[in-house]
Image (cartoon, protein in one colour):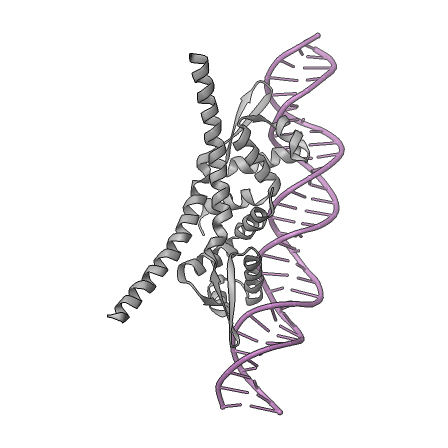
Length: 107
Length: 107
DNA sequence: GCAATCGATAACTCGCTGGCTATTTGACAA
DNA sequence: TTGTCAAATAGCCAGCGAGTTATCGATTGC
């Protein structure tokens, strides 16, 4: 429905991209070359993925000489966590309403 | 990396599909016709989306006469929650390691 | 200055996916 | 039995997105 979810879910939907993000979470700061070495795809592909992740706010880049380091931006996962909580909340409140109804019928 | 994440993330990546799932969480049990009325796409499209959601374990179907009711399976979100927690965990443990290192260097 | 390296961009291909219409299947009503 | 309605399936098409190779820009070492 809203924009942030859209970009976030789409960014995390691709397995290669998710693997890159996981690696950045696990091992922290990485150069593009280091990420490419384990990504199983070409360097341009990795660059493109990093672009998508950056656009989603999931990573930051830091230029250092001719190297570019990327790092995970953990806070960007907040909307995803909020969304799951919201879904759980809907579920719960429907359950509560049912309980109320049964209680009112019982009395 | 692992299978459950893959199917789950992909299933939730599509906005139409996510809207259907959200609606089922909000309002509970719905027939295909009811979902189609608000989905903004054709009935076959909705059926296909429901198939994907079902395959991901996100919904259940219940046949009642010639109607089919779908409902959200909230438990299916668990792997998603686990994943975010895991990412946060990696982050935290890296931070802890850094702290330890600094502490050792300090003494 | 020159060569080499890192990363991004360009330009292209190709498969997948989400959408559609038409049709089939199955359950009920008449 | 026949007609009708709900939902799924079939078959098709268009667009997107992830991958490739080739190239460009920038930076650094010699």
